[in-house]
Length: 246
Image (cartoon, rainbow, N blue to C red):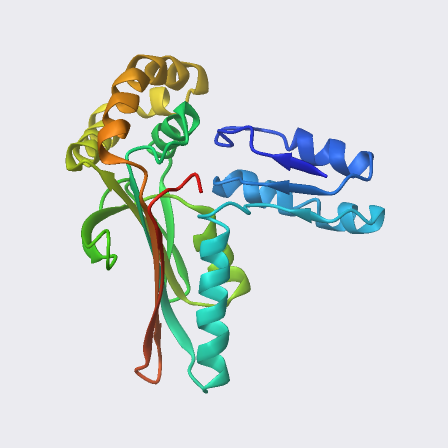
């Protein structure tokens, strides 16, 4: 089996590892967190099936575990004659979550992408790191600000779970990292944020400071998935852990 964790997946034009796995009949799984890449990977479905190759994309914690949480909520609602109307993903990770410079590069590259969301079945585009909400993640995390990001579970939840209104938001700590992300989204040229080489150089400069602050804030992670249904029944899925790496 090939476990593909060599991100960032943003701005990648080809699914070379997946294609190599299919051609050598090797089982494949990745932790992709990019909407375009994940849908490019899904285009190999028939080819993988014909070769008898199990292949799973976007199978990290979020997206990944969060998708399973959403599917559980939707299936439970429909078993009780409720029709899902709105699904919202909320994520929080302290600092970089101990995930290293790759997560920094991913975050900056996402700031260069329009946010795809769905409103009553219609695809809409929103500004990255906008639409702040203050969300309660419960014990150990409590209330945190979260911001819109372009994440693949939004499209897959809309297409495969059939929920008409879907969005995803993310926030971090300390609070000034959020301010920095907001400033980058508003003031850095989009061309820079979409250039992997330039983003890589920016990350090299910022990474030592991030590592130092990570040592103070830790790597606590929390995912909250909210589902609203036509029958007025609202449900919440919540997962938290003190260490993202675990």
